[in-house]
Amino acid sequence: MKLWNDDLEALRPEARQVVAGALGAIAEMFAGDGPPPDDLHERALFSRRAFARTTGEPDPTAVDVEIAGVRCRTFRPDGPARAVYVHFHGGGMILGTPEMNDAGNRALADRHQVAVVSVDYRLAPEHPYPAGPDDGVAVVRWLLDHGEGEYGSDRLLLGGESAGGYMAAAVLLRLRDEPGALDRVLGANVVFGVLDWGRSPSQRGLRATEGPDMLSPEGIVDFGDCYLPGMTDDERRAPEISPAFADLRGLPPAFVSVGSADHLLDDSLMFAGRYAAAGNDIQLFVAPDMPHGFQAFPCGITRAWDDAVTTWIAERLDG
Image (cartoon, rainbow, N blue to C red; front, side):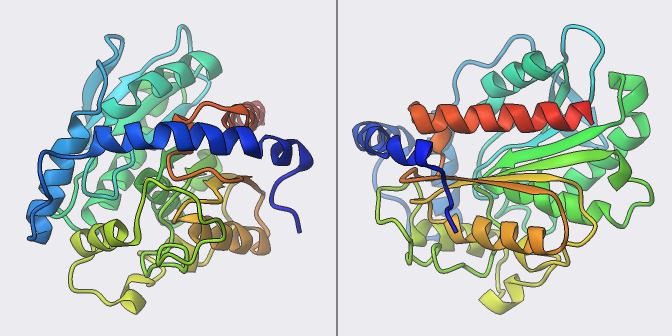
């Protein structure tokens, strides 16, 4: 079984060079002032403040609205929306905001003629599980009921990166209990998601590719302890918490992508394999030698990934 084709294989030297040259500067952007605190909650807030400094200038075309009591950042296309793309930002369930994806969400709305609703879900440690997924489900339920009148379509696509990929998968699974909901969900775009909160082998440091990464096993432990306090790894693998351990039958098409150097590699491989075995339509994109957050490293592999995602979304919209 080959996880990537010969064209991507030929692009690996360039990718390694790009990552090696840029990862240090990117990591420095996310570093806080001084050493991290010893206390777990204070360390989470420390990381949140450092991460906030990396958010670029907000897009002036975005409009903040409240949907089902949740702040959402919205982008409208120039003309009727073909669907609503519900976006969830990353940040390990402890940091991040919709603004960090303004540029990508604006481009998504323009490229595919969709409305984009980026959800500012509640974060741990102040709001541990299930607060974040509860917010995501509430927004999606509202869009199923009111999306046609507000945005011109009640057809939905779900998507997100890292913790946002987890949110997309978790919300999708909960929608299965809503009569008629999955009929209007065109698919889920799960980008290097956290899909095993019980810490998959790669999360623990047993990666297939020993390349540099934006994540570390220690940082992943902090995310889990903030989001799921007091739970053992086995308890965190309950199907309602970890999508990779859920019943995955009867779900819409999905696009799953991850880098082979990502500490979340095994999450995506397990989820994608079980998703396919359950009889669903799924496309898996493994980016060789690429780390977590690989879209931040422009090279031939990330361009190939962007082309693949663009094609997949267009196919979903075309039915």
